[in-house]
Image 1 (cartoon, helix red, strand yellow):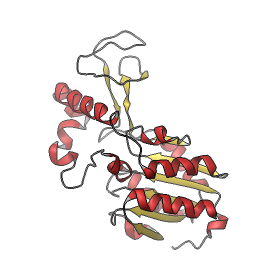
Image 2 (cartoon, rainbow, N blue to C red; image 1 turned 90 degrees about the horizontal axis):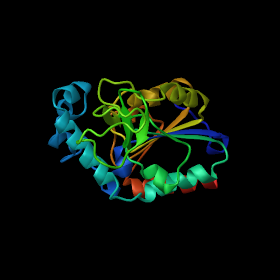
Image 3 (cartoon, rainbow, N blue to C red; image 1 turned 135 degrees about the horizontal axis):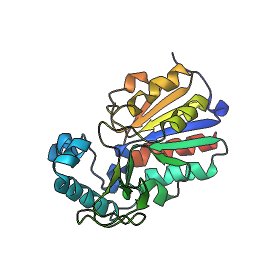
Length: 240
């Protein structure tokens, strides 16, 4: 089903962002040539079983990622979406699969992290989450309960349930436009959002460097670097 809803009819927007949004800031993507999963197997660093089997390897991996994120800056795509957040008078939710904080540093506020955040630590003893910018390898104590060695990266690993799914689906149900930016279309449940949107009669748009695995589900696709196609689209929609 192709939705013919006009831009002037759009009030509520849901945006999904993936690794392609942060790639031009110097954050490695996962599935590109030379990406993270060529250097580290998913089974070794991104599952609960990996953490139970070799916590030192997993904690070192995420300590390095946490350090790297703090060295880079938001790019033009992040800033464009922050501008949309500030100026769009209708409903807006930016759902990011990314675990960096570049959307926030650019100024986005109507945002949620469905896969967690590198700059958070989760205490499995007391279930509290804390802003965390240092290392976890040394097994520090939880700031809340004081128990040592129970902090883990606040990251949704493969086999775990993404965060705040009820909010995401509620926003999709209200949306007039769903936009996917910089995603591979390979990781579920996020890869299924476009089909959920289409079932609700929502207009769908893909902005990506190249066709994703789910490109055929979108009403429209535009390809190019995120720092080019995202600002151009934001300018277009804000001009109405």
